Every structure is written in structure tokens, then in C-alpha cells.
Length: 450
Figure 1 (cartoon, rainbow, N blue to C red):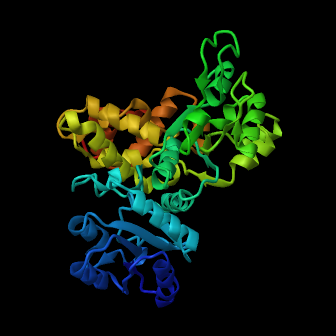
Figure 2: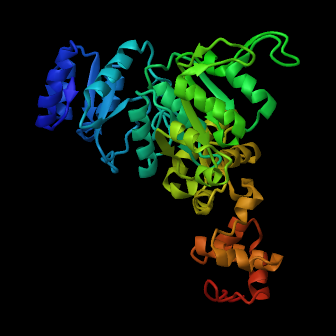
Figure 3: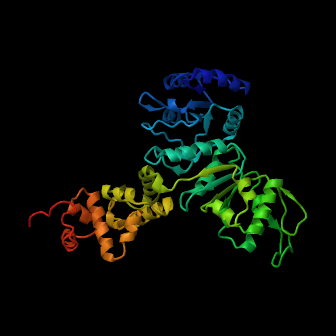
């Protein structure tokens, strides 16, 4: 079924689908789609994202609930967005960009016909986790993340190399796994390689393999990871850490689509897709001569830039719910207080999503009852000071640190000193004493009469 209110889009795409050998029914609205679904069986439904909600509910949720065997493919206008007032759970759905291209349609249908099981994200039971906004294991509904999801959906159907850039902790490996899982080669191996963790003497053998006797200690032949991946995906994490001499070998392998194990004259076919990631500025590395320009251009056919968490803070509540569900299974901690959420939203998260995950895991471990409280948070989060240069310049003494923390607590509570004391984990008499000590009585209004 092709669901799109744009009649010109129907006129262009329906004949193409019929050329694929498909029997096609067209619907102009979500209500029309539901009516058609009630009358006959469909294998695949293509839905314009703008029509994914109908009659106050979700067309996608209805299809999942009433017709769980149907493959769904979403379509979105180039540069278009999901409706902000009706966030959609896109997990597991291929997303094609309009105007549709014949080759993209063909790959999407080929992938649907090969799929034997539903994606994991669409097998979850009804509940809070199933409703989390996200895509293929990534959590977040911000516009910056939706752009990432759209890009993943487009390039997952191709075999071009992809370079994922982003700060440490932003989820670069999750993006690589999403690219693999959303493509038609998802049944093939996904092989991660941490280029920064392996010694330079070992990484060449790990990637390309070796034959027996190739070097001291090579007592038997070993197949390299590039060959082991077959037609799957090799994920080169922290590719900027590769030694310069190994970069030339990787470049040659990508150019010639061939692998030569160490000590061997035999050449193996390189069929794996290469997805690389880095938290470095490779432009600077190239200027220093630490990274080859030709390898950069070979890897950077498609670039995906992951935003740091401080630039998508609207995703923090969904991430927190996700981590609470992940870590709260063994304890009764299921909720978070408003004060804690306010602190999480005001923090800049230099460690990004990984730091938030660690924070929630720690809070669940230390917490008691059903709510995470302020005292369960790490001290660095309780007394954080922001990122402005003026703040950093003021912090020369412990007294300055206390003053800044008290100001922030009063601002967060609208001047309520009792609540501010609770935020800081101190008694109300202590905050009154500190306000007098630092001459800050008028910061949030006059003190109450004794």
C-alpha cells in the first residue's frame, strides 16, 4: 500500500512499484489506509510521515497492534520534519527521502523481502520503553537527532564508506550499528575495531591477518578482521589513532578492494563496508601530517556529525527514562524528582550521553525508595559551575565555589531558600549563615524575620 496525500507522488511512484511486480493500492490519508487494511492483507506499507497519525492516534501503532506482520517504510520530504506535536517512534522503520529514487525503493523492498524477523525495537512490549522516541537503538527526538536518523536511513542502503564524527560519549558506535542494522546486509557480521586500544604492532595483523611465520610468534595463520567481516560492516573506532604507515595500507585496501595478509602473496577480496569514527578534528591532524588526506577523502564519502548532549538537551528526559528502565530492574527506583531533572537539564555534560548513563546508574545504585533524589547525584554534578569564561575565572577559592553554587540553587528555586538548601544537600540554617557570611542576603530577596 502507498499512503501519500500528494497525488503527483502517487502518479510517479505507484507505476514504478507495479513494475517491481507489486500489487499496489493507494491511499490519500491515514483514515483511507486503515479502511484498506481492514479489507485485505498487505505485505508492505509505504507511509508519508505527515500521515502517520490519524484520528488522534498513531497509524503506525495501529498497524503494529492489528497487523504485526506488515513491513512499514516511511517517507519524508527532503529537509522535512516529523510533526513536533505528535512525536513518532521511528525505531526499526526504513526512512526514504522524497522525491523517491527508483534504486532506493528497490533496495528498501529487497531488504523487506529478506527480513525474517521484526527489528528488536519493534518487538518490545507496550509501555514506557516502547514509547521512547528514537531510532534503531538511538534515543532522542530533537531536530538534530532526527537529521541523523534521516541520514542513517538514506545511507544504510548503500555501501559507501561513512565517517562518523563526534565527541567522546556521543554514541558513535550506536550509529555504526544502526547503519548496519538498517541495511540489507544486517545478517552479515558487524566487526568493531578499537584503533586506539590496540598496540601498533598488533593492529596491522588484526586488520589484515597474517600467515604462519610472518613474524616472531606467528605460530599459525590468522584471518584478519577485514576479511572476517565478509560482506558485513567493519567499524574502525577512533580511526585517527591509526599509525601513519598503517593508514597507507588501509588506503590501498580501500582503493583496490583487496587485502594482503602479512607475509603472504595472496590477495583477498575486500567486500566489507567500512564505517569509521573519530573524536578528533581530522582537519588539524591532516595539517600536522598525522592523518593522510587521501585516506580522509576515501573514508569521508558520507559524513555523519553527532551533536554533543549539551546541544540537544531536550533529549535528556527520554534518555533518563531509558536508563532508568535499564538500571532500575533490580531495584524499585523508577522515577526522578523535579529538582534532579532540573539539575540534569542545567548541566553541560562534557562526557555526553556516556556520562549521563553513568550518572543514572550510580544514582539508581545509591538511591532508596522509588525516586532519585539530589543526594544520589555525583558531587561534581551538584556543584557544577557552567561553561562561561567569567565563571571559570571567578573560581579561585573554595568560597567562590560555594557562592556560585548558592546563586545557582537560588536561581533554580526562584529564591526559595529552603528548597535551595535541599538542592545543595545542606540544612536551611547553613544556607542562611552562608548568605550572611558572604554578604548575599539580597541575592534572592530579604531574609524572613527571625
